[in-house]
Length: 306
Image (cartoon, rainbow, N blue to C red):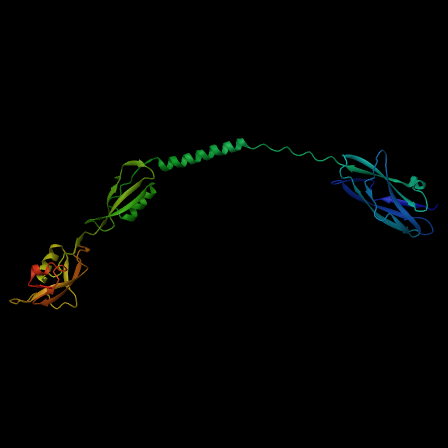
């Protein structure tokens, strides 16, 4: 009988998920080629080999070495060590004839890792966080709504007054009031300066705008009457480029009559504003008295349809 020898890449295999492998190197030490089988047999008290050897029967030339990949699968096996006996022998002989050349491989099936304990819900940290948040919110609300003194801003320009109130923690609401004070000056505030009210309250400001007057109803009136009414309303009168007269002729039936006003009658204008009138010289006026009711009160006229 010739010599067939075998070496293993490892004497034991630690399986991962029940699987692993090693390499068996089988050498034909005879003077002629030989058919060699690599077989796996249960070792010790084991009843299974859990082993697979692809292409176990091979013809190996004299003095040559073949590499066998040996795989293991212990899926379902309990944790522990499982011995497997590997024997390389001639196909023309029985495996027992080569028992003294057997190699035992220990298959190590590790116990599954113990799961880490699941940490409990961090109620303490949640409670502490809620308490801290409530403290912050309470502090902010206290600061926003605690009482504060309203700054006095009457007599100051609107922009400066609004900024002073904002810096003190107050909102503002602005209305206009006709006044002799310079335009844009605060003439009244509510609440008054120096009062203590809740921070965040709204302070109403009355801001000066120029005094105004109303353009009188002078359509159809004589220019003399229009001038008198404009003077009483503290408005300056001037004539448009299309006006044909600026006064009624003396000792004549003709009258210088106002036919248009710019801005319109009833408009609100600043004191001493310039208002333009359009006039014409007329002897008799044919007009609907419902449209210009003042005409027939100030000069001779003939009503339409009359």
